[in-house]
Image (cartoon, rainbow, N blue to C red; front, side, top):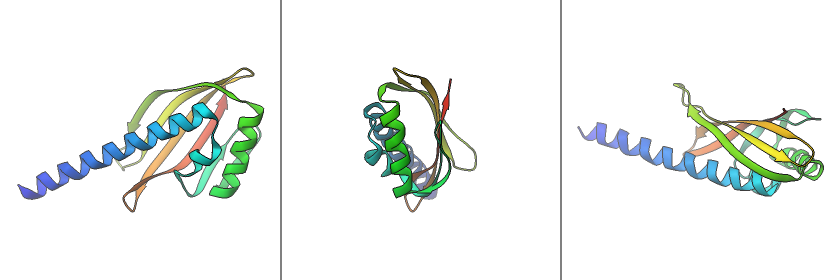
Length: 126
């Protein structure tokens, strides 16, 4: 019984942490804040924008995002769907808008060392 209670408690804490990371991610995307966004990145992140695609370190990814936000300043961002896989990956899909274009945003996170870390961020032009 104790192990079930501990497992349930761990699941609740993990879900809360995931929700906090997604909320902070949403705020960073709305603000076009590459520095705040990269604090949730894994050491290497798969990043796709309209002009760049590849595996980047946090520092490299911040420069790519800074350029993306400069070219497409945000006018809004909203998550449309959030979920998780049986393997423990978390994902979210949203819409990023700027005056020049609208992008579908896909985010995938994993849990490592008690943290939720983003390992995929993709902007696909609608």
